[in-house]
View 1: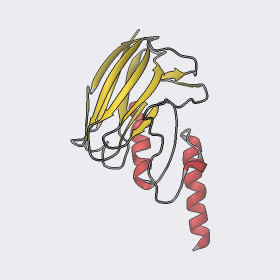
View 2 (view 1 turned 90 degrees about the vertical axis):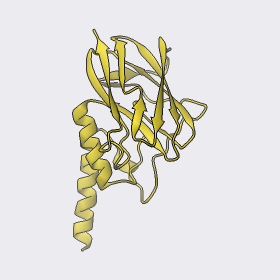
View 3 (view 1 turned 90 degrees about the horizontal axis):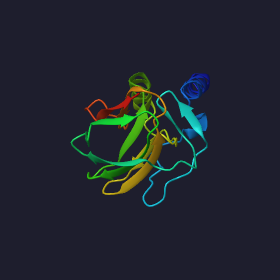
View 4 (view 1 turned 45 degrees about the horizontal axis):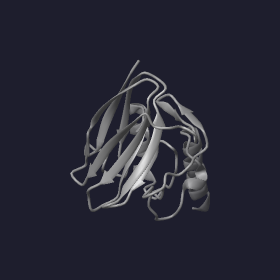
Length: 171
């Protein structure tokens, strides 16, 4: 029995590393943690196909995104220009925690499935934010590539219920 459990943990760790998440981000029975109530967290610089983050970025525009227990974001469709640095201000109007994770449709679909298998997974990246019920949070992101990208709440069940949207980055 012990060998099977260890193989499962090794497989889980390999999945996290392969998808850009740290295996050390797993913990037993908790929730997502990086609520950005009044201060924005600083992260290491990162580049993804859907944009980038640098500590010294200054926003060009602010977009307010509301999260609701109806499993919807408002707005659910956002348009920006290539090169825009956006300050997202998230307002959780619900009674449960929600999150906003940027990515490609494929990466979010894969991550949503992983969250179903490991619902206690904890991770903090500059392209995701977790906002407790009734709270607010901020996230800064530069859209350095043109295309259509996705955002969603990957808490198990939320994404499947339709808590997702698109960001069109015009070149």
